[in-house]
Length: 202
Image (tube, rainbow, N blue to C red; front, top):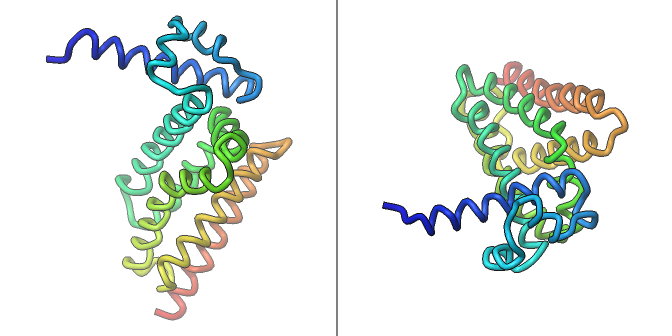
């Protein structure tokens, strides 16, 4: 049996992270104070410091929350979805672009995280959350003969870079929906090129 104290502690932590996520999305890291976070979460400053060392630790928890939610959604279609490896890959690209249009993903993961966490740590975190999924997708496409048998690691790195650049393009655009359509079309065209090569040279 879980104790009430454990439930309370976990609910307090979750309230703080949810509050931080909302405020960082609305106002950015620099524009959000710890006072505003505890006020929205309806907890004390002491409760905040019981769970987090400060604002950056809260930001990283919010970042993890956004990335975990995105990864769960992408895994559901790209790994666990129906259809062939190609069908799942195409669904995965569409799902990723939809994620890139979400305000919390744009603000926290793409715009704020490289500055708050530092570029190197941000890239490591992005790789932790996303790269394995991209690599697994490429591996499935090669094994099923859907794309030409290029080196999996290199191909996954190139596509991972393209997807990351696409995310930044969408988040930085004055017209994100138009940018999203262009990013989707471009990445799909690259993938279809690899697919044609596989069929021409089986």
